Image 1 (tube, rainbow, N blue to C red):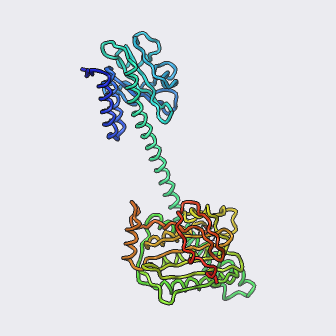
Image 2 (image 1 turned 120 degrees about the horizontal axis):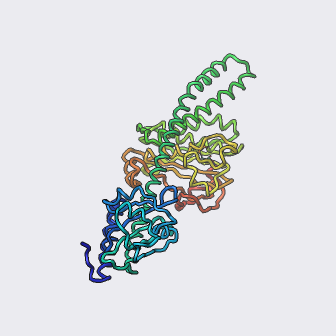
Image 3 (image 1 turned 90 degrees about the vertical axis):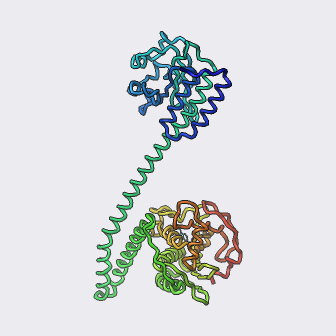
Length: 469
Ligand code: ADP
């Protein structure tokens, strides 16, 4: 028995109430059922249904209808050129037919399937973001009454709700599919990296072992060649190690083995290990450490990897005759390490991207320098694992300055993590926004920083021309 509304206003009040309730329903199927039931109720119709374009885009399919009809309707393909729904879909306009019994525009297969007869019909387009995605129909107004403009307004309002819900559901499906595809690719990439790293380790170990054995038995001429072989094999070993570090970090498998350690001693040892390389490249390396020992509770290997990557980059991107300076400082609660160079610098628009995995400023295949674009992302992750932050300042053509801060104690680290914690990054601290580009390494201009890193004020005393001396 249909509900009798006293006037249009009371129907609109009911419509408003229905729309409010609809927004609380997140599942598509029950939501569409509520919508068609409400449309039938508010327009005094026998039933209502929703049709959408099928995947091949050549006819319409029923997406929602009263449950007792759905079984018969779901196999029907409603043609776009010989049906009321098809006309409404194609023209994006509503259509009402009052005496539909003999009207040729009605697609009769539906009546046949339902062993019923369409006596009147109102159909409106389902529009989402300006695009018609389907049609909503109301059938057989009670007492042979005619569909009115008011009915059209009511059904259009409900159709708009249905359109948004359907579109959102499609988007959700697409996102889900894309996500699954991405996860599958990610698994393949990880497997590939693991296999390549594993398979290359053994032959590389043999190359390194045998070249070191041969070194003692060959003459001076061959020694040079052997050194090239050994240093190339070492470079390959470093790349393989970066692959596996990066994969471990990406999958949150990295464990921090904290111990009290002297960062001063670690920095000195690492800087010294680069002296030979710096000498070959005719780059002078300056080390500046504070008078008192810099001590942190941290993981020596991981801090070492971060620092090595920064120094390796500083030497790689600085020309012959240039300078690289490594400076250690104790700031309250933290130890700060800075690696600066007067090399080629980094364009401001690249600064926000260089910490991304595999990102390189020059295109990989055309660039002069080696590397695979993992060094900085690994350094950042290693520092963040400690609850520390890393930042960069650079002026193109003049040099770069990378700094990282490590909390002195585990307690300080977890306090820092609590401060920075925003949501699901459990156990991690987001990278501190970089400072704006400033005139480090001897020249004063302060350039605006573009890219995703947010500028913060710079203390001019931080970057004096004296720094590189
Ligand atoms: P890669 O191993 O290829 O050097 P990184 O992640 O270490 O990868 O660095 C990413 C990119 O950032 C580098 O390819 C380089 O373009 C730029 N970069 C890093 N450090 C410096 C630096 N000290 N000076 C100039 N450019 C740098």
